[in-house]
Length: 227
Image (cartoon, rainbow, N blue to C red; front, side, top):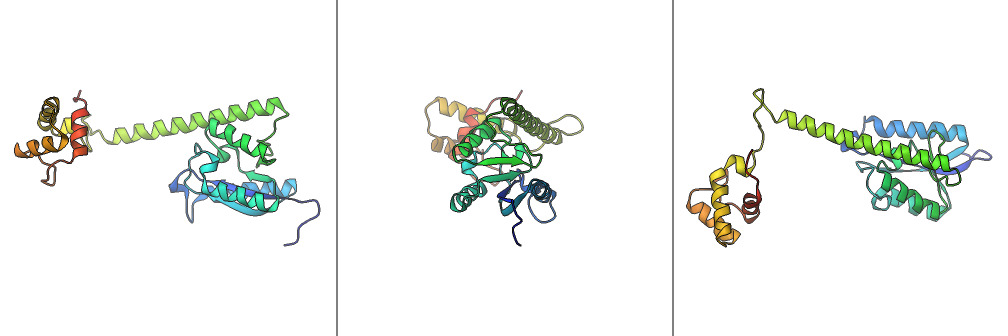
């Protein structure tokens, strides 16, 4: 396709934070690309290449992301200096990762623009810089809230209707006698291997009828007693 007059070349960057949002029929990548394309058309940019980091956390440093590393190599090779993203959280959700990444790009003479027209690499407008940091902190907060919410949901699923804890029990809950003996033998100075042999001699085995491995003995010794 012929390049229109006065169009500036740019590359698009897409990031999906969860594997559940990756693949055919998933909306996240398609939505991000559409938003970037709309902005590019309105603002006079030509998207000459796309780079994607599927199932990559927004807290990961940009230099550790395969897609963004390829983007930097592409830019270094052909002189394109504009990166388009859907919003600041697609670039980086974690505030520290966002600021460090933007600092790197500024030194490389690059611009990162969102589909709303915000210049994430703008340094002359102090208000924009402050607003970018505030937006990044809220995105980071929202991510933390989501993680906590999902953890609470998982915890609720592990309790039955009577409020009893279900699912995989700790060693202290599932085999208190073995844990007590392991701690006693460890206090007597026995190695993990000898403790495993002593437990087996007393009839304490795994669910598969095998002696406990050293890592299991270590967990038994350092496990907390059930409340």
